[in-house]
Length: 262
Ligand SMILES: [Zn+2]
Image (cartoon, rainbow, N blue to C red; front, side, top):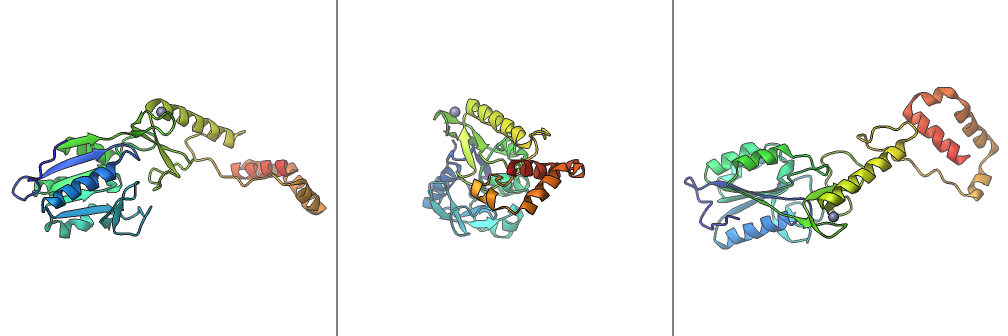
């Protein structure tokens, strides 16, 4: 890990330092630690965080998972910060994987003499690359990959796993949605989730690449069943006996619910 307090001055001393790793590996904590160190050396530091991340606190702070806070400027793109960057020695970017222009501006600021620190996920919850982050690896002077503790076996964990079935790449969340897992536990959990996704969508066996449809619970108590009007029960029977509703998956699901209710 390269830490030279004298860097960050203008005049060709710019560089890019990357802090990578899965969620809960301490990337933001490490970013904040480095920023505080440069501040102690009288360097002017600008901390940028992602505007869409309001997990723990009010906007304007970078907050780590252990709730350490530091004043930050929220942005959606790095370009938004460009007109204020000239005043600073050190530009620190948190959640770099969400910045669409990460490579362009990190490289430009470093070329202008700034020390650019970037904390970012290197891979998605499916262990796919965040391409701009990996592009920046080729342009960085220093790369650190941190590891977390596997939530299941407590060995070292290098990967992020999403506990919920949502499929979008960008889904901001904390321990409610994500966990860090080692290679073996990630493979096992991903397989189990794919299988449960298929089961949820059977009998049509919809591809596990699609998020499973959340279905409302169809269980009703005997008392509730007894209170259902006869007409209601008849309607459900008609739904099941009407073949035209079986043409679309959504309708097919509804018919399955009706089967359960009966
Ligand atoms: Zn594990």
